[in-house]
Length: 179
Image (tube, rainbow, N blue to C red; front, side, top):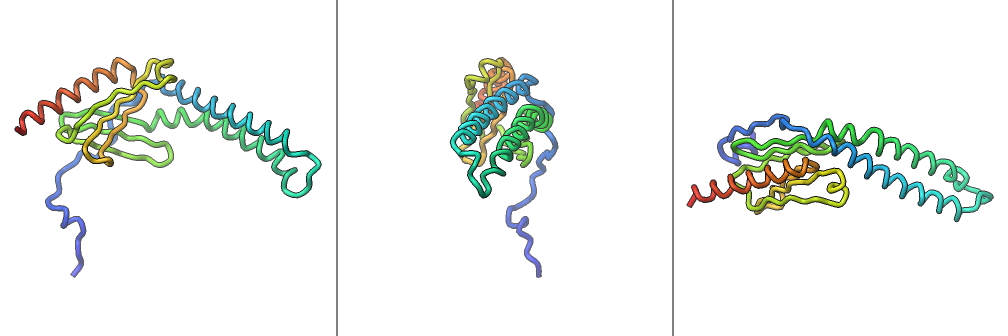
């Protein structure tokens, strides 16, 4: 007789497994391009240091590295600035429904996270330095479980504040109904 591991979880509760409705702010593309440019500049500077420290006349694999490392840094810059921000914008999505907060993140490994309103304990709005430059903020919805946190990055700052306020009120209302 085969054992069904799903049966041990109890009756199935229908969960709306679908792509969340809303994209992040379009300004997130500029933020990601800036982050990519900063990291590409750091890698380029490290490459210059590498090329100035390692003499050109050394034999072995070093001559190969003298041209391969700059090429790889150039490829990284193209991906980080010209490709990754646009792909991330297309795949990152979020939504708040009557029952839960949904987020879909990741551009290579995609993560779909759902937190029921009744599980929300804290809602935070974070604004990093570059986010402030681009007028963005991130919302973090936290539960008692470390696995139950939903991060909705790079929303317009006023949208993030409204979402956080709405979620905090709804979570409080659910707690009041339970007592």
